[in-house]
Image 1 (cartoon, helix red, strand yellow):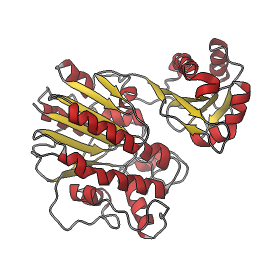
Image 2 (spheres, rainbow, N blue to C red; image 1 turned 180 degrees about the horizontal axis):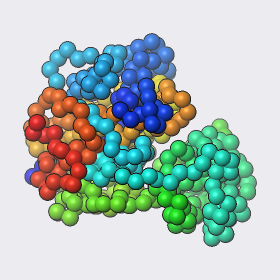
Image 3 (cartoon, helix red, strand yellow; image 1 turned 135 degrees about the vertical axis):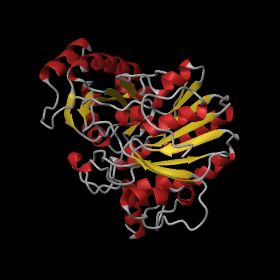
Image 4 (cartoon, rainbow, N blue to C red; image 1 turned 90 degrees about the vertical axis):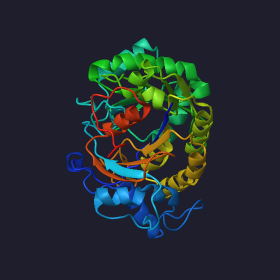
Length: 407
């Protein structure tokens, strides 16, 4: 029986989507702009230098997929040899450019409603919400109460948080309420408890996620977020590929934050790790052990969290190169009937204004011992990915999407 491996390179967009102008993102291009900066020598660091070097993804069709999406091959991504993967790109049907919308659509369930968002005002949260949180969680108050980058606000308010015991509450352009607190001084379980209370309180505002953001360290110089992040997410509004596959007797293994994104529905096993390469290691272990009739579903969050949102072009380029170097190892581990799909959930162009996600096409690179290489063009929805996996695994078709396995 077949297996499927889905890898979401979180935020790895390959050019403005047709509706990007609605989001203020016309002209954004995560891959293209990174490649341009690398080619100009503007993304050199102590870890990497020169043109973007991702030959394995290029051989899978990345450069050609980008060309189909934007009309040009990004600098350094031309490929003169035979392709070893099937490739294309997809646009998003969902109304937002957030993580849950992208992931749910990948699994066959586009988000056809609008999430709630908090305004850019300061304070950003309604007083009745924060008052209720303070009362129900028995807090001395809260800090932040604004839109912010997580690492920046921890550096700014971490010491005051430790001194006062007030958690740091903030949001972003996503539909999210985030709470940062020190693992030791505040307590990890205490943070989770406060987040559970907040998750119930934000329901009337149609907020998609409450995220616990634990950190350690004693000063801004050594504050560091840990791998004990926890996302409390609204469950998908319809059965996803994961629900349907699990119901049919299949096994879904989550690596990284996948389980949280789907509110743990349809997940048989959850594996956590911190950092893209540690997540890749964990994924390889699961691939080695996963039975037939299984899905290993991995999110590589650092592309987005560490580099996209922080507008770190060199860091993003280095992360892409590190990932690319592991692809031969992945290919060597595949069974004859395995299908691998590398894709993304949205863009997060590190050269773009602000620090928000960008509305972009995502790449689809599909490969495996029995997968015929070649182009399959533009897909009208990310749900074509889930439909293709359903087709490969032999379960009933999903409600949305078209398989690209057979033309």
